Length: 351
Image (cartoon, rainbow, N blue to C red):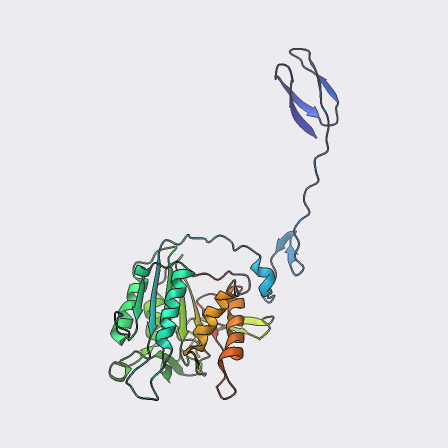
């Protein structure tokens, strides 16, 4: 091994020097230059993971089935985003259906909308001017079918790489027969606008067509839907199946018997949806009043459990069961669907 050395008198470069030599004579000024050899510190040991594996001596992260704990992964900094956020937009819709009869009216959906607006503002820095509110409150747009549809078109209009978009809905959800063969249970999921009695419902195929398929590469859209029968209300191609511990999970392809039908994914962008319950389940309200799923979503983020998608989903399910559902309430399990598969316990969550 050789190291460079300059003369201490005339600063002449003395070519390369064996690292264990003690003296060298400068060829220009004849000064004897003494070189004190010191051993370089050994290189740091390679990083290791207890559950990692290697291929051709290249260390790889843990396999998809491995779930990081809430506490260990909280200390890991998230990787840099491929695209810096250039613009943030959100559509927030909360409907209490006031004056439409005891069996139809809800109590907490407007509260949910206000809480979600506050979360996007304080935690995720969405500008107030970039959030469209649709509720029955004075000063907000009425959550009619036309207004909701126009707001969703605005949400994705002219979106570009780096944009972060959010669609939030709290209200009634339902199902209707499907005749196209693209649903496993032969039922379409629907959202009920304020004027659903006269204008009809918003079907999952319409939602997919408006805010999923147009999303280009580099754009991320999150949907958070707190409604009955909302598990696959965006008709996304993949549904995350996960047990209570999080150690057994996989992505299930969500397409009906006619798998040669229309592709329900994006144009290269990413769409991820959290929903209040499975397609065959009902969502309930917490006694405050607020929607159980919305309460669990915000609570998980406040407690620091929103570091990854998997941890956020598990925390939501735990909170719903523990704090929001009594013995007389039906089972409710928040769901996660996506336009593409990914490791839910290593991808950081962000809006």
